[in-house]
Image 1: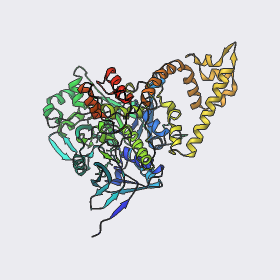
Image 2: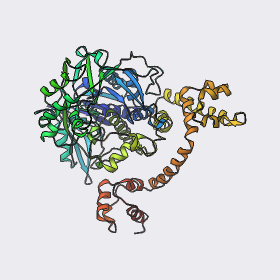
Image 3: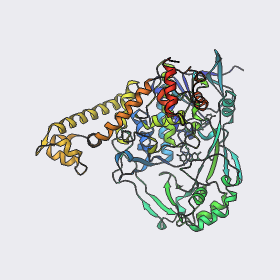
Image 4: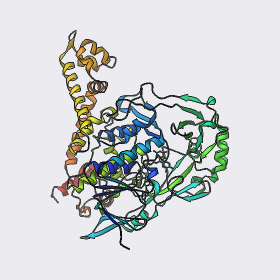
Length: 607
Ligand code: FAD
C-alpha cells in the first residue's frame, strides 16, 4: 500500500486557542499551512471557564487583536456578558472580560479557520514527529498521523494543550484523557522524550456544570454586565448578541466541614496526584485548607450560552469524589436541588519546561519545531492564544528567511509572557498578572494598537481595513494634541487643563468645539498621554538602558563553558537558558551584575 504524504510549509498540531491563532497567522503570512486536530467539533473549545479576558488577560486579548489575531473578534461576536474589571483603579489596571456563548465561540473560530486562504483544517490524530539529523543537529521534517499518513513540513508548531500523557481524576477514579469525554495523546510525549526534551507534569482542575432549570436563583445575588459594554476588538463597532446575567452564591461552614471530612479522598491530598497546580486558581479543597479562617467563598454561576442550560460554577473547581460533589451542592444556597450535568475533575498532563525554547518559541533541540500554549507550562486561553500567534508568525517568517518577531517587555504583555517563560522557566502553571510587567503603565489595554499594529503591519499581518482605521485614529490623536497645545483659556493651555484629574474631555470640548469630532477612543488616548506624560518619561529612561543591553547580542552558538572565570552556578544557568541578548542574561534569576560584567568582557573579545 502506498503511503499518503501531504506537503505543507507549516503544520500546526492541535486546534485549541494556541493552535488556531498559530495556523491563522502563518497562513496570513502566505505559508501553506495545515491545522491538524483530533476532533473538528472541539476547535477552540474552552476546557474550563466560558470566559475570555480578565485581569492582565484582557490586555493580552487586545494585543492579539492589535496584531491581527482573532480572539478579540470571536468574543465580541459571541460574548453574552461584558465587564471592564478594575474600573475604579488607574487605566493600567483596567481589564476587559466577557462571558462567552461557549459553542457559538467555537463555531465562530472554526469558520474563521475554514475561510482563511492558505489554510487546511483536518481531523487527524498526530502520533509521532518525524525528524532528520543534519550536521549533528536534529531538524523537523513532518508528523505522522493515526492510519499511517505523513504530513511533511520543515516547520511544525505543537499546541497540544493538556493532552500529553493526560490522566483525569475524580476522587479515587482515574481515566486517561486531557479533557472530559476526550482521550489522551501519548505518542507525542514519547516522541519528545526520544528527541531529548525534558518533560515535567502539572495538574489543573475544573468545577461541575449544573442545569440552569434546577437552580433556585431567588436565593442568589444578580450580577449584571456593564451598562455600556466595550468590545475587545479595535474592529468591532457594536456588540450585538443579547446579554445574559450571572448570579452569585457562597459556600458555608457546612460545606467546608464536608470537604475537610473527605480530604483523604481528594487526589491532591491522598497522594494520588503529586504534580503542581495553578496556585492562583485553587480548587475548593485547596481553599478550605489554605484559607481555613474564611467562613465562606464566593461562587459565580455563569451561563454557558443561549442554546444550552449548562451553568459553570466558577470558584468551586474540585477533584473530590462524585458522592462528595453531590452532597456539597445540597448545602449551598440556591443549589440545594441542582442537577449536576458534568462532575468536576482534575487533569494531570505532561508539559515541556519552556527554558528549552528560543524567544521565537522555536525549540533549541530540534530546528523548525515550535511549541505554544499549555505545552509550555502556561494556563489560560489568552496566554495560549498569544503564544500561538507568535509561534505561527515566527514559523512563517523563518520559512521566508526573515528575522523572527520578538516583542520586548516594554512593548507588550505578550513580550513579558514569552520572556518570562524562556528566561526563567516555570515551577507552577504560569498565568499573567499585571504585576509581572514592570512597564505596565505603558502596556494598557487601551493603547495596544498604538504599541503593536505598526509592527504587525510591517510584517503583512493585518488587513487594509484595520490599517485604515488605525491610521485615522492616529490622525485624530495628533490633531487633538495640536489643538490642545496651542489653544488657551484664560491664559492656560487646554493641554494643562486636561492634565488635571478633575477636568473632563467634555469640558475642553466646550472650550475648543473643533475637538468634539474626535472619537472616544482617540480622546481617551490624548487624555492618558497628557496625564501620564511624567511617569512614561521616567519609564522610558529605564527602557532605553535595557535596550542598550538588548542590542548586545549573544550568538546562538556561544559556548558558555568558555566563561571559566565565572562562578560555576552562573555559568551552568547561562548554558542552560542560552540567552540571546545581554539584557535577557541579566534577567535570569541568580545572575549578578558581576556575572554580566564578565560576560561583556568575553563578548567584546577582551578575554
Ligand atoms: P487546548 O485548548 O487544550 O487545545 C489543544 C488541542 O490539541 C485540542 O484541540 C486537542 O484535541 C488537540 N490535540 C491534542 N493532542 C493532539 C494530537 N496528538 N493530534 C492532534 N490534535 C491534538 N485555564 C484557565 O485559565 N483557568 C482555568 O481555570 C483552567 N482550568 C482548566 C481545567 C481543565 C480541566 C483543563 C483541561 C484546562 C483548564 N485551563 C484553565 C486551561 C485552558 O484550558 C488552557 O490553558 C488552554 O485551553 C490551553 O490552550 P491550548 O491551545 O494550549 O490547548
